[in-house]
Image (cartoon, rainbow, N blue to C red; front, side):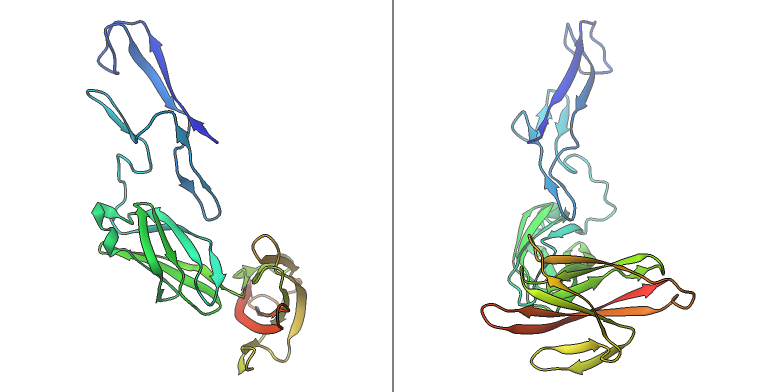
Length: 277
């Protein structure tokens, strides 16, 4: 646990007007030994504890607000701003409980106007917890990345591909010949997948397994593995060959998700593309 402390440097000096003072002491300096909380990123959140209760420190003539934008709002707009959605992925059937971090979710008490869509579909059970946090349940969606949009009566903000419907494959957008590229497979924890690639695309329905989106000729199996603990994400780093004719080539990936328990279930995933620069 991080403890935030307010340190005051005091000196026995005559009262001075430039800083808060009493008849015998002047405050020469003070330091807040933390960046405050809550702090958040896509994958982490931290909260600092204070040695006093309440959000404000006050005296007869001064007030200090502790908290993000507690006393000052530098935003050029009152529209919501999305920092992150956690977790950033969930099954295509929907039903995942998600938390959204940002600002202006409850601007001027406008919480009832807050709406959240994922992949163009309305999330259910949307609750504005505070001006910086909201919770909801993800709707059903199509496999792969989906855009996240938060809106209020003041405007909206979006994160392109901010939520991933699983099973899914996501490859980095660009790579350099002679370098490497990263491909992530998302799926049920412990289930098996096969990763395939091809320089061509197609659209070939294959009921009940889904749709073939690459190849089918040529198509090459790149790897096989399990959706890894603790979250069902398997990361593959693939070496890219070097050569003068590879610049501009697009490499397309699709995975085959295989669940063997309690009954065999095979599902073709979305397609993801890497462009060689």
